[in-house]
Length: 284
Ligand SMILES: Nc1nc(=O)c2c([nH]1)NC[C@@H]1CN(c3ccc(C(=O)N[C@@H](CCC(=O)O)C(=O)O)cc3)C=[N+]21
Image (cartoon, rainbow, N blue to C red; front, side):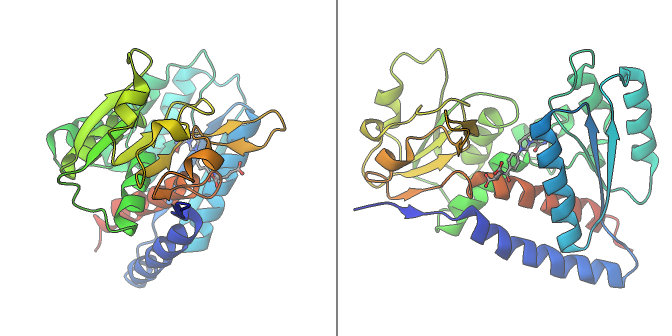
């Protein structure tokens, strides 16, 4: 039996419709959610991504500004721009597109964003809030993965074993904490794991977030498991593909997310949700 798809485009449409309705209500009270997207340099992939983010904002009725700077922008100049956006009452969320040029310390830039406007959830204050279970913005990609699990009836994960492959600060680590907060038993695997397949075969839920093709193959998956593919890779023909051997794994798994059309659109959807909530906190 082949796995059922968790359709990130369809779920995004539903959630964005709700965002649009809440935005309309906010605007009737005189408040328009505003997102600033800051892009430094001319990374071609980044150009496409930020344009998609700005387009998504327009579709739900947000105010959005795209600030583009060439790669010669200094770190001090960027920090000054962040400070101005922190003070700007029309802006509720600030997103600085990563990666930044090598001469800019991304840690320093992220920490300069006011935690109240950190809709990416990358600030240490947001990461710390997740760690200790306090209110704060959740990183959009793992947050989107949790919404995908919820959409198939997996909200309370008590009794479930979740295996996360990857331990990055923006996906793997926050993903593990969100699964833990939902009562899953969580295993985090990475390049230092001795026998990855032995771990993933025990999993009811596998989240692959490595950034390498075919990290997860059919022989590594328990029949009926839920497989979430966070990977964004290009194959030899330049086609977008995930970390999961989709064609093989879909014959074993119970549920699987496609790439494209899975976690990617959900990441942008959760950015919209965070920005809306940043604005709603100021509701007059
Ligand atoms: N500060 C910051 N925040 C980010 O959230 C951030 C970032 N920097 N830097 C780059 C990565 C990458 N990222 C993606 C989001 C959506 C898609 C997406 O919607 N993908 C579509 C397809 C896109 C295509 O066809 O190329 C899909 O999977 O269906 C992809 C990639 C956000 N990132």
